[in-house]
Each structure stands twice: as structure tokens, then as C-alpha cells.
Length: 88
Image 1 (cartoon, rainbow, N blue to C red):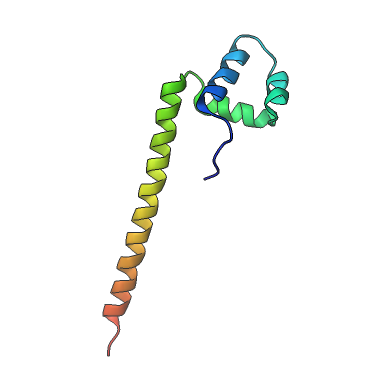
Image 2: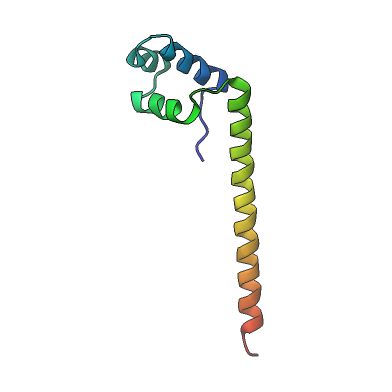
């Protein structure tokens, strides 16, 4: 998963500015992002404050790590089953 170069506070600030009436194109130009990136943020993070956004990112990271651990364990189990199933 690609890490963003923007902090939770910057994302929340940008979303709040847009809610306040500032144009999305101006905010996007200032941050150096595509307008679609801003709309993706809005779809994903609108209505959150900084603490909630930070917690969401922590949970997403933990979920990614757990999925990787599960995939590794499943691969190990498959390899062991393959070895045990061979007739010597």
C-alpha cells in the first residue's frame, strides 16, 4: 500500500476548507495533487476529525499486516501438506 505524503491533519484541513466554500481546484493546486485525489479523500474521510482519521489509518495498517501474516501461514501449511503427501 502506498503511503501518502500528507498527514492526517493536512487531509482534514483540506476537506474542511472545501466544506467552507473554497474551490477544490484551488485546494488541489495548493497541495500539488490531482482533483480526483481530493475527491477520493472526500469519499473516504469526510466527516472525520484528525483522531478518527489517525485511528482509521492505524487499523488499515494492522489489517494489512494481519492479512500478510495469514497469507504466509497459509503458504507454509500448503507447502507442508505437499511435502507430506508425496510418497517416498
